Image (cartoon, rainbow, N blue to C red; front, side, top):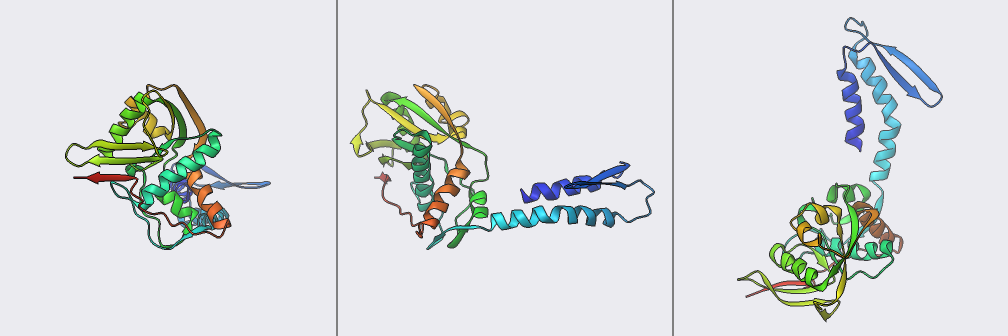
Length: 253
C-alpha cells in the first residue's frame, strides 16, 4: 500500500505536459498551475505532494508496524512439512471453520504462496503482508471420498502444507501408503469439507480435481486477514506462536 501511494505521487510528477493539478485536503481544494515553461522548480510540486501524502504515509506505517504476536524463533517453509507451513494450514482450517460455521476436515495451502519467513520476536501486520501478499480468499469445498482420495494423491506428489491429515508417502513412488483424516481412515463413500484458497481451487494443478465437487462456497475472507486475525488473537491472549513439525506429512523409504 505504501508503494501505491508513492506511485501516485511519481505518476503525478511525470505528467509534465498537463496544465493543472488539484491538491485537495478536507474542506479545501487548491489549484496548482504547471506548464512546460513554469518558473517554479519541479521540486515545489514534489514537496506539496509529499506533504499531502505524509499523514497517510505515517498512518500506514503505524498500522503496518503494529505487533500482533511474538515468535520464539524464525519460522520457515519447507517440505514434506515445516513449522511455517503447518501454522498456515492450521490457521486456514481453524479460521475457515469459524467463518464457514460448519465442521472442516482438511485445509490445504501452497508453499509457493508463502513468500517469506516470519521473523523471531515481534510479528507485525507488515510481516503478514510480506508472507501473504496476495488477495486470495478462503473457499470451502464439499468433496466425495473418491475426490478427496485424488486430492490426497495430489498432496503426496506436491507435499503442500495441510491440516487435518496424517499422510505417509512412499519415497520411491510418491504415493500415499497411510491416510488418516481426523484420526480415521479415508472413507471412499464419505463426504469431506476442504478449506483452501480460491487460487488453489481455480488456478492450481489441484483445480481440475476439486472442480468435481458437491458444494463450493466463497467465504469472503482473505487468507491474509485470516492469518492476521489468528495472530492478533493469540497476542491478545498473551500467547506466543510455537508451531511444530508433528509428522503429519512423512516420507518413508
